[in-house]
Length: 167
Image 1: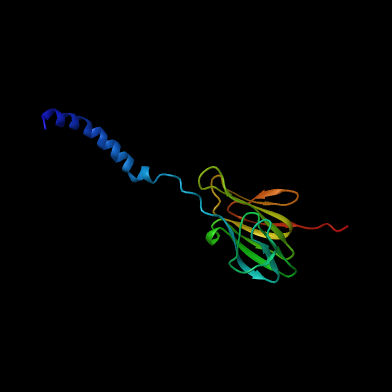
Image 2 (image 1 turned 90 degrees about the horizontal axis):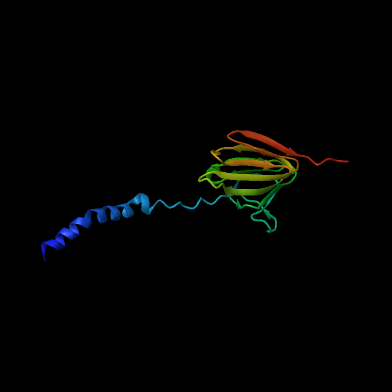
């Protein structure tokens, strides 16, 4: 081998070495955005007659502790009944107490376009709920929609009620 070969290799070695190190670095190899965690609502406490639909379009089932409800699912309670549901793993996004004669639909369990911001929306058709929202930050939202309004709860608790007007 002649000396010119080594000089040519040496001249290109340093830039090639740094380019290789850049693409092999963990920051580049693993910097892809990981998909957001699956969101769900989980039944935590029950008393009395509580029924649910796990997903939209399913039939009503008798609720049991630990059951998970997806977006579009519904929960309804009977007379003298109550349910407590947790939003996300270990109630990371909040907790909802559902009182007697209430009908609630899980409207949205999603993420906003900005990373990490959770969007949560419950449709309260009838009855009363008590919401304790937590873990709502940045562009995240936790909302309760009734037939007449939509309210946001952020880092606090609030009670909502929808009554049927009797004629």
